[in-house]
Image 1 (cartoon, helix red, strand yellow):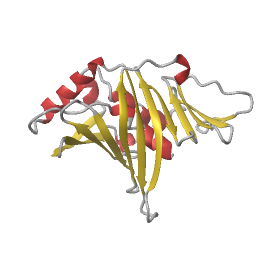
Image 2 (tube, helix red, strand yellow):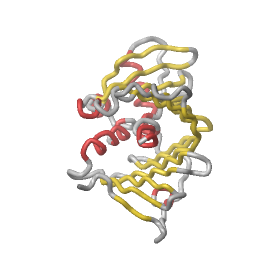
Image 3 (cartoon, one colour):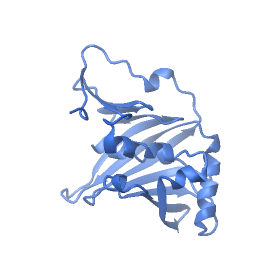
Image 4 (spheres, one colour):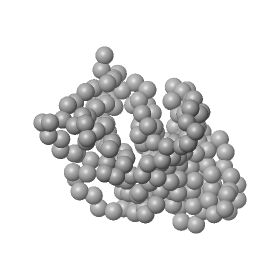
Length: 224
């Protein structure tokens, strides 16, 4: 769940805001326009999770890859302790040490709220303003140092029950995603800070189609 929560917002919302003034419409329009040439993206990340039940936050590092339309691969830990790979049909969550993998169907009735929440990834790369507005409401926009803080709320009530708020930290000078953070219903917060980002790198086809041997055990948690 920790990795899944992180995935729902990270590479899905790549970009930044160059607006010199607090004109929300101009900011969003500029951000979407800047992403029109983005096809692939990868970066290192440091993930910090803050929970009310823990005195100290949990900190992990990893790497993320993204390719249009809606493919991603997250590796949490070095070496990777958890790997999540997603395409239009399904998501695999892989635990290399345990030789175990979970398969989540993202189409049909089995997808449920998980599929709906993961659909937010596509909203990070909309073809037009209409498709963005269909998924998000802008709750706040504020400058801080050389960055914008952009708060987004999912439009659909069922999605908001899983992810009430998404916050982006966006550089004002080069449209770079610096960080994102989600607030979960229990008040927990998950923040990802990105470094060493690369725009439009070439990926091997195997990046999003991992070959798992016969030693792996597969489960499908969403199936009744």
